Image 1 (cartoon, rainbow, N blue to C red):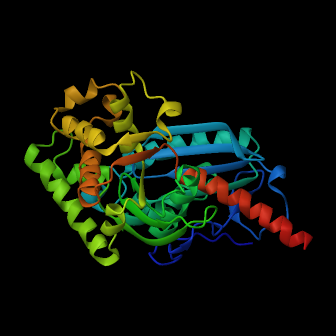
Image 2 (cartoon, one colour):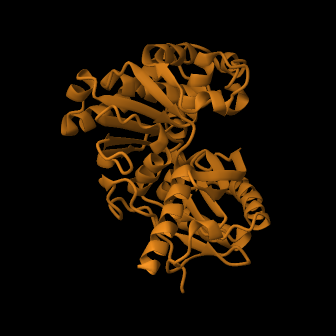
Image 3 (cartoon, rainbow, N blue to C red):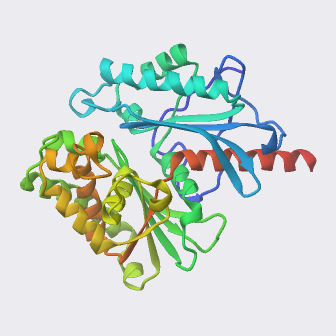
Length: 370
């Protein structure tokens, strides 16, 4: 079957509706050329699964085996590649950024082959959606690494992100507001939690304000107090439009909403709040953090210079230049919707992909048996 690459046009797959609509699966052949194929009537137990997420800032891979309660990670990879560096000014992915990304993807390809991956889904998000040479980059990735990237829409990105954090949703609440602060965009998803296993997406939005795009627009590593306030106001203006359309505030005021944040910004700020000397996912993922406390951390970091931020545990050189933009996004969100607690998720697209692929295989088996 001829390969089909899906591009990221908004509206290709509407995000409203039940979260657990299955993503399109892929089955690997021996040379790691990932091709979209008809679903096979096989159980999850026959496969080793992988999920790859190439974002504006990071390249991340999970390889997993199924278990009765979900999956067990057998290998992983994460590297900051800054694929979207300079994209806001040039409109294209730079040669240097492309080389960094392909170097990381070659490592992912080797891991997938070594682990015998037979079911995979590889996604690229905001940077590839926005870049004029995004499709050409994906073609080069296929030629040099054997990995076929699916440049997904913001709608599918939102759905996968929610699917990845389903275990952290508090069903004592009627609603949840989930946000994901990425490198090139920020997604917000408004959920109805009445159906425990399959919450309904009531509304969503994808903003072009991510930590890379905001940082490059407002000053880079050193952001003045004036520029920081400008970032907060820029993000807040977009959020107020979402609020005006969907009227979330009364539900926050009634105590009916859980706020859940995913991304490096949220996990980093949580780690700083906890006083961790080194980042520890086991302590951060699923933690509840008072919103006033995490806002205080954000404001403290925004008031530091670059070298002071580098010296803060859980930040270092890799995050010191981008964390301030993330702080601005967090402040804007909690300004518009003042929750008392924030649940932190160190999980997202990759976990959502794995969950959906395994559920899809289970559904195919039941269809076949029926």
